[in-house]
Image (cartoon, rainbow, N blue to C red; front, side, top):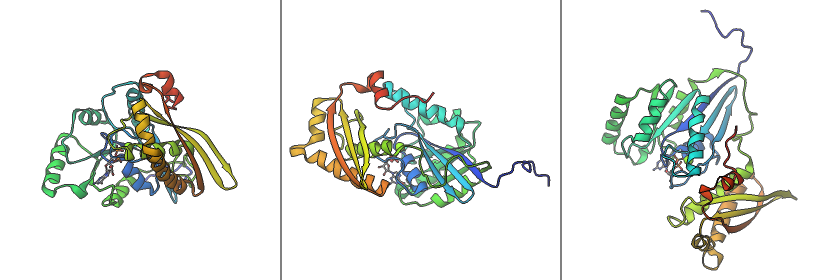
Amino acid sequence: MQDNNADIKTDTKSVFVLITGRPNVGKSTLLNTLLGEKAAIVSNKPQTTRTRINGVLTEGGDQYVFIDTPGLHKPKNLLGEYMMRAAGSAYEDADLVLFVTDPASPLNQAERAALKSYSGVSKILVINKTDKADKTALLEYIARVTGEFSFDAVVPISALTGDGVDRLKKEIKNFLVPSPHFFPPDIYTDQPEKQIAAEIIREKVLRLTNEEIPHGVAVTIEEFRERKGVVAIRAEIYAEKKSHKKILIGHGGGMLKKIGTYAREDIEKLLGQTIYLDLWVKIKEDWRDKAGSLSSFGYRDNK
Ligand code: GDP
Ligand code: MG
C-alpha cells in the first residue's frame, strides 16, 4: 500500500476538538473530565463559560486540543453577541465537533441550526447526563436525533461520573492526524492562570448566591504576585446593582468570606501553592451593554 504521508517526517499526531451544545448540557464538565483538571468552570446556571478555553491533553505522541465554547443561544446583549462570535468562529478551526446534548429535552431550534451549519465537519453526538436518564427514553432520543442528522459516532456518557468517557476518547482518537504538537506537553490550558482564577471566583459567586445574582457579575484580577512561595491575588467583583453588592457581601461580610474561602481552595489546587486572596465588591451599572466596559473586562475579539 502506498503511504501518502511518507514525506511528513513526524510521528506525532494532533487533533483540534470543538466541544459545543446548548447551555448547561455539561460541556465544561466533560472538558474537565477529559483533562482531569479544573480547566473550565462548571455551574448549574447556563452560559458560565464566556471565553474560549483551550484544554490540552498530551499522551505520548498524541495531542488533543479541546475548545470549550459558550453555549448556543440567542444573544440578548453585547456580551451575548461576543459569546456567539466566540462560539461561531471556533468550529472553522476544528477537526472534529463534539455535539453535546442532554436527552432530558428534545433538540431545540438553536441546536438544529448548529447541526445544519456543521454539515461538512466530522462530528460525534455526545449524549450526556445518562446517569439520570430513563433507558427507554434515551433510546428513543437517540433514534430521533440520528434519524434527523448523521454523525460519525454516537456516544452516551455521563461527564459527571465519567461513564462512557473512555469510549468517547477512543472515538476521538480516530480523528488524530499526523502533525507536530501545538503546545508543550506539560500544559493543560492556554488560558493564563489569572483568567482561570477570575473564572473560579465567578463560579463561586454564581454557585453560592443561587438565583439572587444573575449573570451580571464580572471578576477582574487587579493584582497577582508571588512572594516567598505565596501568591497574593487581589480581585474585584463587579455587580450591576447596589442590591446585588449587598447580597455579595452578605450579613457581616459572611457571603464574601464564603466566596473567598471556596475560591481560594480551588485556586490553591490549580496552582499548587498557598494563596492569599483579597476580594472587593464594586458596582458598575449595566456593564453588559457597554462596549467600553466589555473590553476592560477582557471580553475582546482576538482579531
Ligand atoms: P455547560 O454550560 O454545557 O458547560 O455545562 P456545565 O458543564 O457547566 O454543567 C451544567 C450543570 O450540569 C452542572 O450543574 C453540572 O454538574 C451538571 N452536569 C454536567 N454533566 C452531568 C452529568 O453527566 N450528569 C449529571 N447528572 N449532571 C451533569
Ligand atoms: Mg460551560
